[in-house]
Length: 106
Length: 461
Image (cartoon, rainbow over all chains, first blue to last red; front, side, top):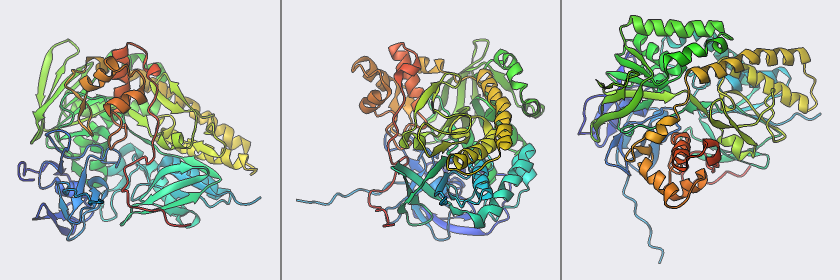
């Protein structure tokens, strides 16, 4: 998230909520309870991932779980859809897909 | 007679009213929904620790939203409710599920009666630069505001056509967000011409005009009959502006950091397809839709369809359609239903259908844009496949049919599974072939209807 640290989403209310700490690409940041991961991440930067097929960064598109443009990854390699995952205390996510290593079956 | 096993997919206006009608007849349905809470997209509920009022959230529709939520809350003990659950396939009397509330778990459930109330998503026409971060669908912009109390950007251009364009722009203005402009591809004359049909629901037409007035009063420019040319920006920082041609033919540009775009809605029909329902081409909306009778019976016995997932008629019509589908299913299963109630619901749907046709006339799908998309424009946002690459498989490999062109080009094969490129892709193919879009056919649905991990195994029943 270093290239564009300015928040993309703008809060317009409901800011009187309990703070939640989480980690994006190793950096500790905060959100509010009830935020989706997408809302939380876009308070701290302009994107949530890098397109694998083009050079551009992405920040979600449909917010209803239909386009799959907001995939992020947990430390153990699990994939999360940021628009439909609620942020939780201590959650750690990566904006980059984990390197795949294929087993040698020979 | 034994109680039928009833499964309703979707907990929006159609699904909730459908469940209510089954419960009223003494049947306990299972309601499966992808959402964390009921309400669907239109009456989406905010998280429990948010405090905005119904009026703030739903405006003139506050009463309807509250009534639907209250109805569902009362039904909770009389239904089996599976939230955060995806139906990813349908086979021979079973729906296949993925519970997504935590570690994903797969299961299947048998049914005698299946009612699909799957709703709709935004309908998109690509434009150069729409892959940049900061481009959102209109529905996305509305969800951000309703369920998260955030604006999707600091300075937003609303672009496209349809009632949602004006509704979301006005909701953003009311909530205090900065709206740079509303750019409508439909010329004003079409909106005037559609008036006789739109008068079938005068109150709704009045509300639409009030929205427009509110946008104007806020000093936000509303431009009609424009042609979108480009979303400008760069790959790292995303959207920085919009270029368009005015109705007078003059090229203009606007600075913004966000574009919210959409051209009305498209029905989510994948599950109806997997249930092997017959489809036909609806000329008014230029989309392939499942066939239904006036009560919501599909071409497959035991499978019923209701709401925007069949015809985009909006929330009020969806509530009626959900009730009608339940009554049809109950009648088909040998239960007594009150004919007068069915007749009244059918009567109420008539102006809804006329209004649907009016909206399609007033805010038409801009099919012609597909033909003039530059070759470098991305059609498939998932995998960055351009209009030129799609045209090449038509022109060089003779792929004149949607599924063949998909196999060669991968447009429609990415992670959204054609939801956001399918309609536009068909128009690009039709323009390259020079044939009506109906001849391109429709993309066949493939299970799973959304991406799933390989390693998950269905639990034994």
